[in-house]
Image 1 (tube, rainbow, N blue to C red):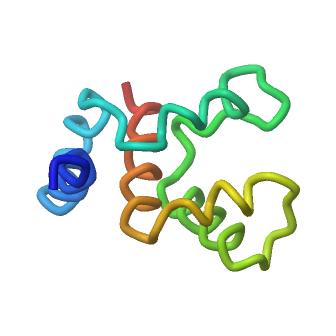
Image 2: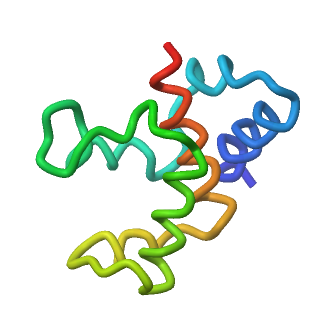
Image 3: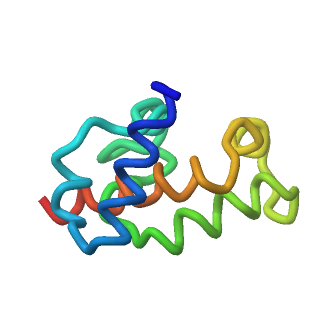
Length: 97
């Protein structure tokens, strides 16, 4: 249950409208690895500050195979829908800092 706590905290912050808290908390599992390819100035573009809906939709499309990819499809399959939403919420909140 310990691994689920950051995910649950992120989701609770979203439900109760405390998006600022999401930006201040530790990234949910998997989110920090996104910056390797998606940091400021990186070839794949920055994710921080993009809308949560956009990030979730992209992860869903990669996971289902409807969006072609060489690597992201395999990465996205490592996250379930709840984990994807938590990652997307955290990344979106980073632009609000």
